[in-house]
Length: 146
Image (tube, rainbow, N blue to C red; front, side, top):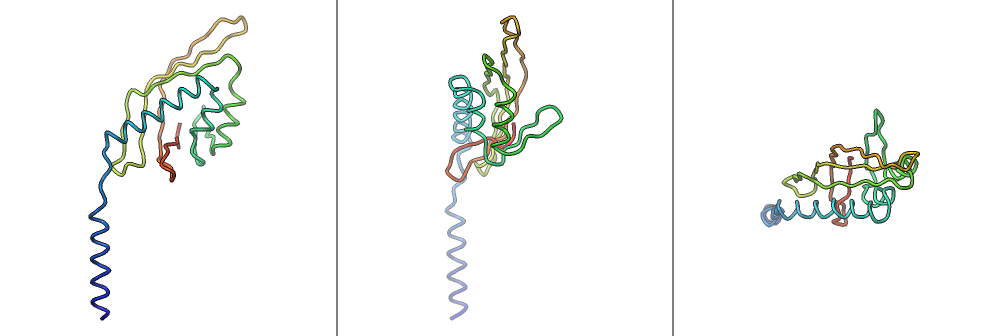
């Protein structure tokens, strides 16, 4: 009887693992690009700090200078304290890749940060960003590294 029960359990376990289908990497890439685009749009439309809060995972980490800013609330506080009225941040991914598991991804590309100086003249800083994204339990993508 014990052997039959163990055999039945083994069959169930094997059949469960065989039925798992690997995610389509191109479809997952499109999800990540959509998240990146929504993040950038929110930053443009509603403000940089709010966008960083909305798209940061609870355990997100940002490197700024020689410091790490850890946690969604700390990221939002840092962004709120660092940015002033009139500043804008624009970016778009040039490249995206995803893990075979479909739950991690990274993007990189160019950004432009614009800020008015004391005379009102707009100064632009151009650079490159790198973001690591993680699928959350609810299926949404949030950044864990920026």
